[in-house]
Length: 230
Image (tube, rainbow, N blue to C red; front, side, top):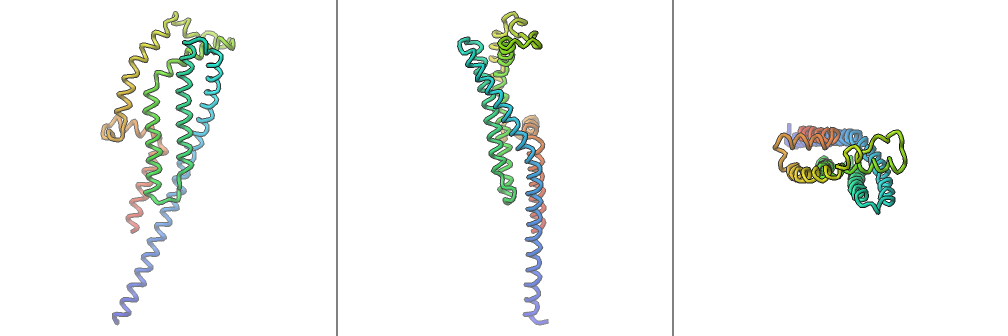
């Protein structure tokens, strides 16, 4: 067999091999887009519902503030809750925008970066939510006042101020003074640079949600398949 014939056969086999590699890459990219889209889509609708529900609560809190603005303790409690729910709603909206901006047909590295960005945002929100837990102490105060204002008899027994003999304000101040330093410590600890700590790693995984975790694991598996294909 002459050298030219050997060279021609080698080029032909090399071309076939390149076609198989391209086909495998296309199949991997197709799997990638379909799997990630089906995994992330429910998260989009979940955040959309959360955003709407928080928006309704915000409207009620704005009405509450308008009606009780002259009563400083209730106004402060209402403002704290309003700020908390505005933060929740803004976070849900940001997640919606990130998810809508995902390109499921992008290359693996780009899609991985986008999912990690979404995960980082979710974890950052979880850190901030823990830091702002003291704001939730205002919820019983606002709920009690609403029950009185609208004469909701079925919940008339829910009167935190009466049941605490007026000491709820004191308890709220003390709890806030204790929780804020703990929240600041927790906020600083929960970071990807501390992911080597088991409890930090567990918190990040749980706060990210199973859908984000599964998406990243699936992309890592595809990255391995793509390397094997090449």
